[in-house]
Amino acid sequence: MELAQTFETVVVSNSGEFAELIFVPARSLSDFDERRQREPIPARELRLQLLSRMDPTQLKDVISLMLSTPYSIGAYPENPQTGHLGKVSDEHREFAEQLCNQPLVPYEESPLQVKSLATIATSPVAAGTFIGIAVAGLTPLLYISVPAGIVVCYVADGIGKGLRQGLKNRLYKMLRKK
Image (cartoon, rainbow, N blue to C red):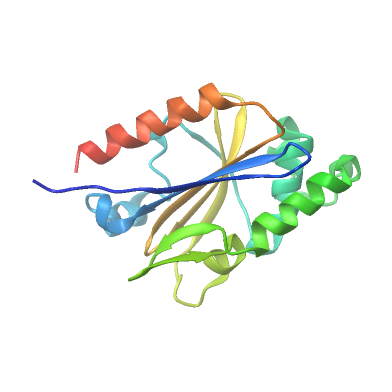
């Protein structure tokens, strides 16, 4: 019997924003390296639609926009000059900044560590990193694929619990196939 494992954490601000971060180690995903070469995210299995690939320098802005204007997030990575950033509240910017730069993501790199999203996304060890925005239903999420595994991040301003549970269930089903 083989065991699969995930590491999860929830971060909540005192002004109501929250993020749920899930790290799935590569060892928990069958043929992970081979799969990463074929498609950056297991979109079909997780029922995700990839909207856009993004640059690590866009993390803070993208997370801010996911909180403030989630339905216009798909346009941002290709055209950062859109006026959407002007609609972001100070609370959302501060939360995004902390989420990107604080060591909050449980990350297995023998032994388990806690790293920031920015560190994971820009690590020199993470050659072949894929960072993208995907949607599950209408809700955007951040998806990072690195050689050590995948990180999925949802952010919300107090909504989205049912959607998160549905995606988590699909992720667990995918792990059982290993």
